[in-house]
Image (tube, rainbow, N blue to C red):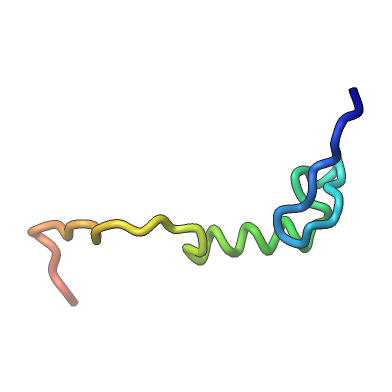
Length: 56
């Protein structure tokens, strides 16, 4: 059975073993920035604020 090559989830090019599951460092970095910027956040109710929260 022939193994099917996975595609990079960012650009669709074939994934490279050095950057798996991505094809390159730029695609890996774009994915990380998306995670850090809440690009993959799931919708849900807002988190409750603690009662003792004070501004200032």
